Length: 395
Image 1 (cartoon, rainbow, N blue to C red):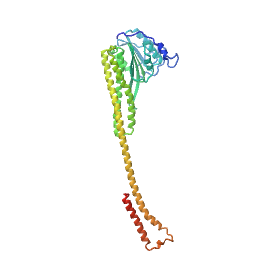
Image 2 (tube, helix red, strand yellow; image 1 turned 30 degrees about the vertical axis):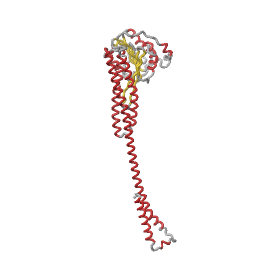
Image 3 (cartoon, rainbow, N blue to C red; image 1 turned 180 degrees about the vertical axis):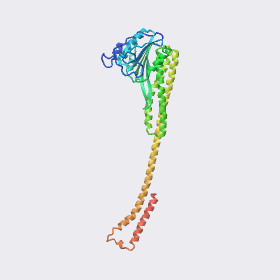
Image 4 (tube, rainbow, N blue to C red; image 1 turned 90 degrees about the vertical axis):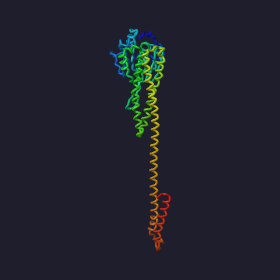
């Protein structure tokens, strides 16, 4: 790799001016250049730590390479700087997990990192982006893994500084597993010898490849949801909505990568990118485009499924309401019949009750035709009521 290193430019004054450097002894101010300090959180990417446990801060692994081969494994940032100065054509690859402010300030002073990039690296929840500050690239990536049981996409944030002779990775979250990236690069020294740009390619490739299991997991869940929708599962609406929200986040992680890789490819000629590396980056760009299109398709499919499910739910509700209305109508008809017969039977009961009171002063009780008259009256009332109710459709 050609020697493109510049003498380190101290930027500590500007950093102090913006208030990044905390006073000695303040919370979170660890001595990144050799003083003892405890790591902030475990090395979730699985990279092995170096032998010395003290003075490493949040360093997951640091190494210096020459011509694609590892020549040193420093234990601290200060030792890394010394080893890199001793290798004029070397490259440092420093992996950090949630570093402290003091550690990033130390790196900024040594490698002349831009203050805005350092501020972004201190905080997670950045959108994916690619920024160029002089000869240094600052890349923010969002790795993803799919948790099948809760049907959630777990995102990890990765900030990458790429300079002429260094690569600094700052992770916020469990993903991605950079140990496999480092192992892959060390197993192919001819690729590592291409310099920091090759390491950036490997990191991009690992992040993009990590999207494939997420895509497959989402596809399987969408297939299950389609079956549940047409199976009439009432809980599927919530599942569709929650998966749609996950796809919105996934889209925010993947869509910016398309423009980022186009920006990298646009600078191939200007920055003299190796032709073989150009092919690798174009391959990553193809994968990103494919993944982004799949995610867009998932969002459209989930929106269509939600609309279909709403239609099916509405139809089912209409069918249930129609069944209830029919049951109510039938019940009403039965009430009419019962009421009609009750009225018909009430008429003779009323006449019989009146003449059953046995009062002495009821002249018609001594009438010879009184009994036939009462019977006839009851029959006439009953027949009249029957025909009235029959004519109205109650019977």
